[in-house]
Length: 178
Image (cartoon, rainbow, N blue to C red):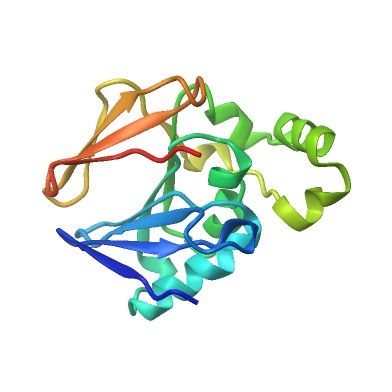
């Protein structure tokens, strides 16, 4: 198992081993005053995310913000399951994706149609995110996490509900596609 990678600027990358493959998907962890996680991958990856946080001596109960770049199950399918470990967190999502995280029935049906018998192994369980813990972020919206400002950009192409995020501390863009 890969250990978390320090990216500098109080940012770490945790390998989430989507499809049991190293370096396929990852979560950014921003060590700001308000602990922030960007991406969760699918539910089978959540144990890797929790282990990565443990390796960093971070408690999921301290996570304040969880951001998903888009709602495809290999990127956000585990957000509801991860949220169960993060009682103080809010989930941020593109306005077009919010309803699907609150009620993932269409996501589940679509994935079952494509993946059939492999669905459970790849994605199960998909846990709904309570509406009161969901916040929409769209073009130009910001999130201040202790002096570090994240600016959200609508970046359709890979998905109609895709966000890219500019991080003021690193002056980098958190763009996750695949």
